[in-house]
Length: 113
Image (cartoon, rainbow, N blue to C red):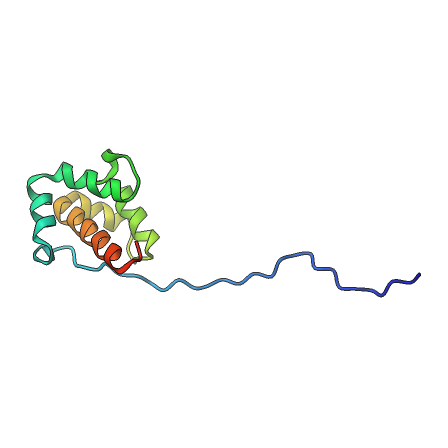
């Protein structure tokens, strides 16, 4: 019995989808776009930090960290750097945390969070 030679597939064909660059839904200083978040970030920073961490299924202590902002930015392919995240969290902590919470809220409303 002679078997016809057949092509043997040794690897699964792959394709990749290029992710489109994302962007923040609001700017760093767009506090008036959601006054409730802004007030919470100004007067109860730790509460807002825990809310953000809870939204991202992380420990409550992690909400206002550079790592959380970097994780979120990379998850949604938002351009930036760890240094930029550090500077935002160091010099504008309430604004950066409010921006993160506003973004989460808007992405949740759009069904993409």
